[in-house]
Structures are given as structure tokens and as C-alpha cells.
Image (cartoon, rainbow over all chains, first blue to last red; front, top):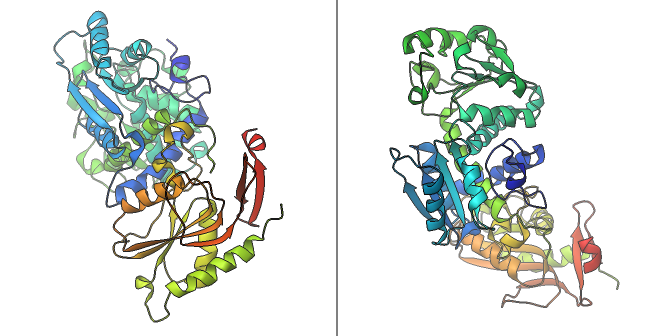
Length: 324
Length: 173
């Protein structure tokens, strides 16, 4: 499935934000630079800029979310948008026809931008194919496919601490198979020319196509962590586990949990990241999560600036050159 | 058309602005000089160095406040706004290079009021080229010029600062 043409308009500007795959380094860097200029908005008396004034954004969450949803909402509010948030019943099977019906009903309400999270891979793409011209779709996580704004806030966090991607060794640890975050991160790290991307996971939690993504595979945490600059821990997605993929959570922690001891194998100034929500004592030890190498809470704050950046770029896409 | 030198014009602004900075006031009570990115900031920087180097210098990037934002888009290369944290009850000297439609100044004032409530804003402009589209006038103008229809004037810099007149056609290409 190529989201390429759909995401970019005729001038190569962002019109939907569906996946990192299909984007280019220039757009990723533009998102990071723009997000940088939004970080200062948070320090002001009035934490708002009028970019989305008069626009309506609908947040459609067909799947549970705390961080992503609330930081999207805050980002929209700081851009002065009118917002509508719908929590669609997760137990209902929402597919094909009924999803189309949802789109058309919301379109009748003159929505300018949709933020969508759905359990089916490709749903944001499907949505984008069916909205009217001029209406934009942002993917807030689709099944096991991608979660592009999360990946961009992770890239923002890495750049904030480490600047130059071309000298970095980054390890992504854990449940790669079920992780849309990991897929987006790997694409983004590669587009930004990261020196080395390692994926560390039990063999049962690696998807089949990982090697084609251009990463180094490790099934031993201690070997994989050696001399890395960035450690990204992933959540063990218990709700997506089908079949006997793991013996037990305890066993998983014994082999793949990030402890203080194991973290010492990474570079002394390595940072520890986690997209949340974290399972303390399953994939990460509490003392690491709260330790001084952890930038996990910073990631949440950066999420607002990055989401503001993506939405502004979409709204301002018809931009030519400024001048008096 | 012969254009005046930027240095001469900046010197005019400096002389006109000096009375706003009484020597008996401490820096925290002096006016705050704020330049609009990019040209206005270069001018503001020169004025700041000459008159009140011990005060804070502010920078405004009005991109997010432009009324034509959806038409012209973002410019991530322009440095973000940076104002001294507390502008409440202060006098602000707002500096820009060229005053034309007045929309830039309107956007700049909207942004300033999102940082606080200044006591007063003084607008200082290097070149006033007229043709206003909204009722905004400068308090201090170094030079007023008239341009041929379709032409526009631009300040290049920061080193050296130089004014050039360009035709719309050159600009687009």
C-alpha cells in the first residue's frame, strides 16, 4: 500500500499525515524545525496562536488513548481550532461501510481536519481516500501499521538531546511485531540517516519483514544495548497478543526488561525513551523509568509542539514565498 | 531611483528614539525594543546597541499571526519569537524595516498582546512606502518613499544592510 501520492500535494507539500513511509527527509526536517518554533508558545501568558482559527478538527478515536488524544487536543486548542472529540465504541465492529458512513456524516458538519485512531491497519489511508478535496486526515495510530506523529515526537526528542542523527546508534527494544510506533520510528530514523538502528526482541515478537527495513537484529538485550546512544523501549501489547508468543510477563522481564544494570552497557549519556503507557516491571524497571537518563515525560510535552507543527504545515501548504 | 543609505536612516531613528530612554531610569523600566523578523530585527539590533544595550532585545516572528497564513504558509527557517518574559506595563518600541499595507504591524501587535499588556507601543519604521490597507500609522519614520506600481522594496542583510527595489516579476521568479 503506497500512501505516497495521497500524503503530498502536487507541490510536494503535506496534505495528509498518514505514515512516515512515503515521506522524505526534507519534510521530516521541516516538521522538526517547525515544532522547534512552537515550543516557545507554551512559555507565554496566552498559549495560543491563531493558525487554525475558524477551522474545525474532529478527533475520532476508535481505540483507547490518553497521551495521544490529549496532546492532539491541546495542540489543536493552542492553534485556536474548534474541536470535536468522539470516542467511538471500541466493542462495535467498525469497518468498511460503517466507517464510510461516519466520514460522510462528519463531512456534513464541515470538518476541516480529521485525527483518527483505529484498530485496523490502513484505516487512516482509507479515510483520506474518501474525504472531500481540501479536507485533511492525520493518522493517530492505525492497527499495527504506523503512528507517525509519535515517531516524529520521538525524533524531536532525540534531536533535542543528541543533535546529529548520522552519528547515532539507536536501539528499539521489545514488542516490535505489534508496534506501529516501531514501524514509524524505523522509517523516520532511516530517512534521517541514523548511523545504526538496532531492533532487540524475542524472535517470536519480530515481524517477518523487519530485515527489509534496514535494521540490525538482536535477540539478546545485553548485546544489543552495547554502546548505544538512545534506547527506545516499547510497551508489551498484551491486548494484541494472540497465541503463545511469550511464556510469561516475568520471564519477559528477566530477558528483555530494561534494568539499571543492563542500561550500563549503553553509552553513559544514553537517553531512555518510551512512547507510553509503560508497564513498570514488565518491559522497564521503575528506577530506570524515573531515573536521570529517562526523557519519557519530556516526550509527552514535545508531542504537543510536534502535532502543532504537522497541523500548521498542512493548513499552510499552499504557501509560496512570504514578502511584504 | 537613488536610495538613501541604511546607516543614515538608522541614525535618524536612533536620534528620534533617544528621548524615550531617559538616563535616570534603570534598565527594567526602560522601553523594550522589539524587531520584526527578519529585516526589522536587524534594525532593532542596531538601535539597541546604540541606545540601550543593557536592556532586553525582543524578536518577533509573526508567521503564525499573519492574516494570509493559509496562503503563504510557514517559514521554519525564520527564527522563532523571543520576547522578554514580562512586558506588562512596559513601553515597547516596535521596529520594522518597511511599512506598506500595515498587516504585518497588525499581526505583530496581536502577537505582543498574547505575551501581556504593554503600557504603550511606539512604532518605528525605516521606510514608509505608503499604500496602507488598514488604518495603522508609524510614530517614527526615517524615510518616506513612493514606488512605481508593481515594485517593492526590500532590506537585505544582515551584513551589510542594503535596500534594493525589485519589480514584482523579478520577485516571483
